[in-house]
Length: 378
Image (cartoon, rainbow, N blue to C red; front, side, top):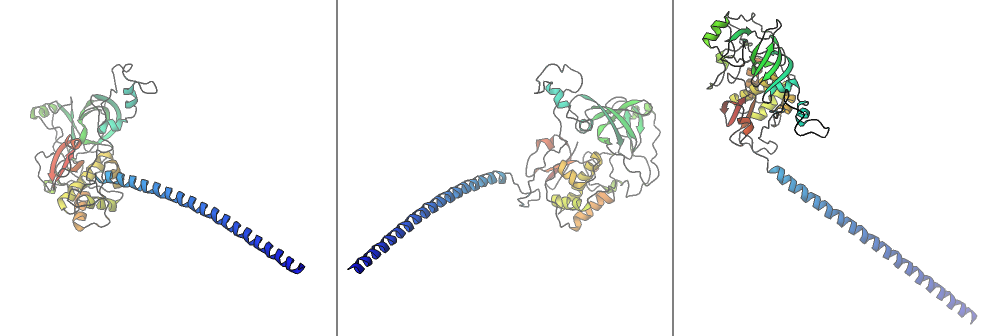
């Protein structure tokens, strides 16, 4: 009997241990299920947030894609936005820089008149490139760019007396900017006015031919003959690689500039130059030449001979192509190596007029339209 009782006790003890073990397993499983449900809930919340962010990105992407246009040649390239914005040196706001009562008017957070705060942001060269309305004192040394020289006028008008001819490459001290004219002071102290578009920031290269001779014309004769803003190019026979002849213009235009002539220009990044022109107008020799001339004229004006910098500052958005066809290479060589020009006029801006409208471009001086693109000077 005692042995049986002992056996029963052992069995009861084993059963109790089994029940306790089962209870522990059930408790652990319950905790695991609870943790798993919490993880699932967290994962679902993250997925919901990710879906919301993806949806927002898709909405934003649609708004961006709404701006994407095919380029001026009709190619459906999503990476091209065929709108050429105003360059970094776009026209500045009209501000009062000299004279006037600056003590009145709106003041900025520093307590200065608002007009004064804006004026302090403009450098003399920025005022020269795109002067606000009115007259502005500056202190600049610039150089005459036309090979035929430029007339020094007694007043800021082509109808005023031509006092003398300032030779190609000569430096002049610019003391005032008035719209399309600048007042200069020569080394001898004489003052006069020059057309602003025929001055540049760096000294132009010395021509390989003999020194350009200037026609001896007295001020009285100049006034009687009503000469244009610039003196006619001197009669000579320069090499074709320096001063191109009239045969070196690919397109005839209604308003040719008799004093405009291209010249060879060496760039720092020739591959980038050819690739950019290929991306802009690479399927047409004349179109590529027009774009190349716009870049060359911009370089000559700004004194910057780096294509990437010009593209960034002046709003070029076409991709720089790694493949450049022979048509584009010949057009670039014609403009940059031979000194040729697409048109007998300076060109700085262009846009695809058959795709978009640009009131800013149309406010500039129209030169020529080709292949659906309109090209402008300043």
